[in-house]
Length: 95
Image 1 (cartoon, rainbow, N blue to C red):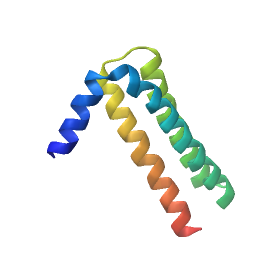
Image 2 (cartoon, helix red, strand yellow):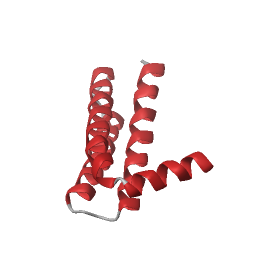
Image 3 (cartoon, rainbow, N blue to C red):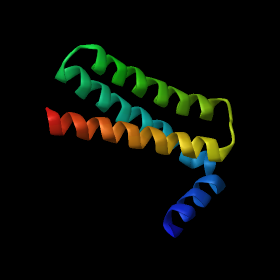
Image 4 (cartoon, rainbow, N blue to C red):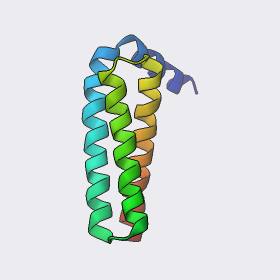
């Protein structure tokens, strides 16, 4: 828990540098997740996963562009990374 707290505090203090990296990471993982979902099949569930991925990545990018509080940006980044990694791993395991 101390490590996560340290990472969060470092993110809040150095928000300018981490914002750039966060946009790249969130968008990159989101793109891979969408590519894997599209390569598996097309139906209602895959389209819902794509919608969820796009919404979370867009919310993170919008929070940075509208200069929200650093803790909100951090939480959206963590949410985006966890969601996209879950979708990627799910597609790799089920695919």
